Amino acid sequence: MSFALSRARGWALVGTVAVFLRFFFILGRAPAPLHGDALGYHQYAVHLLDGGRYTDDLGERASRMPGYPVFLAAVYSLAGRSSRPVQIAQCLLGALTCVFIVVLAEGCLPAPWPLFAGLLAAGYFDLIAPCRFVLSENLYQFFLAASFAGLYRLNWKPIFRAGAFGAGIGAAYFFRPEALVPGLAALALAPLIKGLKFDWGKSLAAAAIIAALMSPWIVRNKIIFSRWIPSSTMGGFTLYSGLALPLESRALVSEPFYFPPPGTGELAADAAYKAQFKSLWIRAGLSRRLKAYAFNFSTLFYPFLPGYDATFMLLLPFWLAAIFISLKRPILMPLSMAVLSSIAVYTVFGGPVSRYRQEYAPLAVCLALAGLYELWKRRPEILKRAGPAWAALNFVIWIFPQGSRHFMIAMRNLVFR
Image 1 (cartoon, one colour):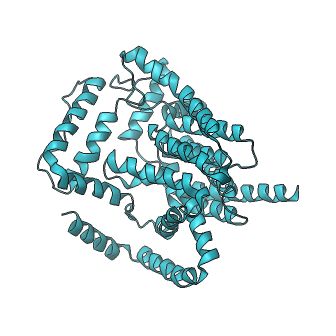
Image 2 (spheres, one colour):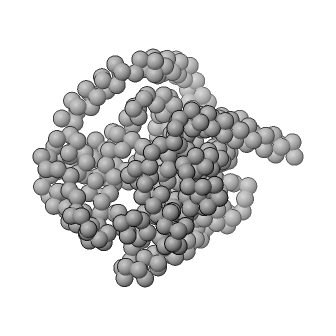
Image 3 (cartoon, one colour):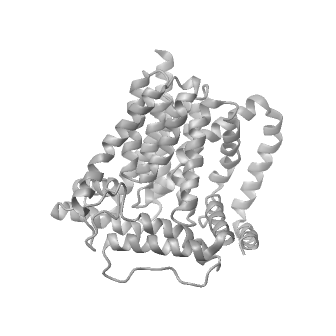
């Protein structure tokens, strides 16, 4: 009983610190203006409230996954159509995400390391920043962390863990369909990990729950469009952007970014983007394709957004180390493969956007603490020597960011010229 009470106090501490830091972050800044993706989500939410139809101002009916617009509509109906109530709700959900990270870490780390994971998550910028924006990252982080917390809740019966994981990934899919990639990667590995006590039957049960949750959206799209659309009608755009944007930004091609003619329907636009991708794929050639995707990959590790993200850089070497350590400590393998598969998705789809690393940030934080723990246990001399130097380097760059940023841009231009 005392252990459970102590653990609950740790959860409460992490949640309290996380809420305070997130409120401090959003209250010190004006709400971000609605444009781009944020405006699209807002339009879907408003049309849901005003007319009960899932559509945006252009009449598109599946260009956005429904999870975030439904969340916005719920907040708008309770607190008015402004960004501040959305931010407050996202701060609370972001704090719960940090608590889920503690629960997740309890499945693979001894005390008090899970508490450290939660406190670091509370102050981790890639978990704080999404609270400010009318974008789906905050909710995606919440459900991704919840799903893996369920999978690693080893004191539950395996069938309950399968249900929690399947429900979490199924919910995350409604915010960002790429949730299926880390989710299925984890389910494929979980039965092979002895310490997880998770057999193939449980993986199939979790996969069945995911499929059941997905089915209403897929069937709805079949009825409306007479076509099977498993995610959104933006697939062609994200695929084309993943190749065209890095080619254009690095001046590897001379042609401008393609946009369909005004008035093109969403299905026709999706088909046009896919055709443009195929054409550009052939014309770019192997060398430029590799450079483009390497640029997307490197952007996920770029530390300026535009300010220096010291929290990301401080933890980066530790979660990278944990990925290698997972070969010897298999309990970490589902987490490692979920992060690696997410990185692979964002390397190919969407283009060079550093913000995409926020999607798998809950898992990266947990892995970082696992890497730190393993180094502390096995090679403390390395940690004692390199740790302070790494922290000092990050502090200097954080204090004097401009020179460091110009140097990194110069190095990037040299590599990707």
